Structures are given as C-alpha cells and as structure tokens.
Image 1 (tube, rainbow, N blue to C red):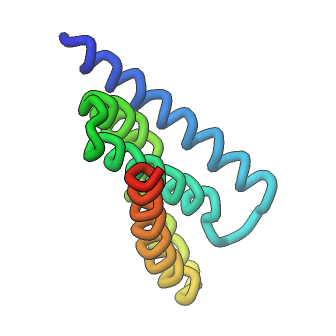
Image 2 (image 1 turned 45 degrees about the vertical axis):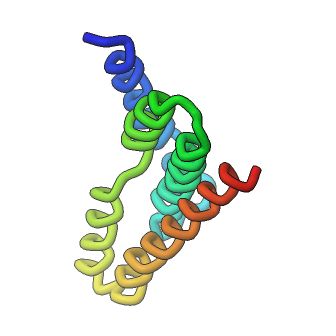
Length: 123
C-alpha cells in the first residue's frame, strides 16, 4: 500500500467524522425539518474541492487533490444523505421542502465549487 493510499483513507475517515460532528452541531443548534447541516457540509466540501482543483490546475502537487479532495471531501460531503432527506421530506408530504432540498443543494454546491476554484486561481 502506498503512502498516498494510506493518507487518502485517513483523510476519508477524518472527513466522515467532521461531517458527523458538524451536521450534529447544526441540528442541535437549529432544529428544523430542513436538513441545514447536510447543506452546510456539502457547500463547504464543494468550496474546498473547487479550491483544491484550482491549486492543482495552478501547478500544486496532484496528490493534494487525491488526499484532500477524494479522501477528505469524499468522506465529508454526502449525496446519499441529501437524497435520503429528500425522500423523508416527501414521505412527510413536505413537497416544497423536498424540492427545495434538491434544488438548493445543487445550486449552492455548484456555486461554492466555482467560488473555490476562482479563489485558488485568482488568489
């Protein structure tokens, strides 16, 4: 096993633990039917992934993108939770919240990734 593989696995575990902690903290602080914690996690992860991609495009070592992008961001962000939350909201007949969850996650994460990329390239 290579050093990069070990670091990628460790970063993935750290990302999952960070997601669990941040999502739980948001839910505890601001209880809501809408999954604000998941949205925050995905926006922050997309921002970081965009930033890392920009650094690599600007000449940084590609292993940073592998370890932090694939590893940490892969463990941190969660598409499956967005979909599970959306199904839960739909089953509760919270149609506007279900649709909003999908649309806001999609729009906000794309904007965050673009912003991260821009920050890296322009910074």
